[in-house]
Amino acid sequence: MDLPLISRPPAAPPPARRRVLARRVRLLVAATITYNVIEAVVAITAGTLASSTALIGFGLDSVIEVSSAAAVAWQFAGRDPESREKVALRIIAFSFFALAAYVTVESVRALVGGAEAEHSSIGLVLAALSLAIMPVLSYAQRRAGRELGSRSAVADSKQTLLCTYLSAVLLVGLGVNSLFGWSWADPIAALVIAAVAVKEGREAWRGDACCAVPLNASRTDATAGEPGAGGVDACGCRPGCSCCAAEAT
Image (cartoon, rainbow, N blue to C red):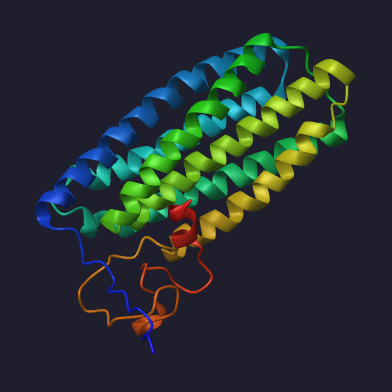
């Protein structure tokens, strides 16, 4: 009778690989900061011209995204990034909470006040570009952060992914408003995004970046997909995480 295959959890990356991953995270963070600075300037300017709360809010979200990415850049600029991780996570968590608070206030204000924004072609193009670019940056940083075992890098990648959701909300909101005049669609969807931001902020505050767990040789062998020592499975994921399945696709 064939015995079930036992997989060994991968060892922590060797020093040379860790340097490569840390450099990759720095480059991805720099790209995120550069894009978001441009995005913020364009969105806030276009939003002001069109009297669009959604566009202005999207631009301010880009400013918050810059602060989150800057926190990770600061962490990896030091000789010992791990020693700065807790502070970086706190900054990222505050960024999520600030984003959630702003989106909630502005959404309620838009719903109660019934403010109507004008059509903005620039806003539609910007939202479409962000919807295409942000998932790529988020995925690349998340993979590097997981392999490196950096919770802050993974948390920042979630911030970038949240920006993707906001891009979709903005695109739908501006599009629906332009086509049908349904001004309530954008603030309603934005409230859902605010709830997601609170959840991600809480996880960043606790350091729960799901699969961003440093893989080390101290773990005992485990059958793939089943919990091993410390409740961590062979892929380095805690219970309730589906990172292994996601990475396999």
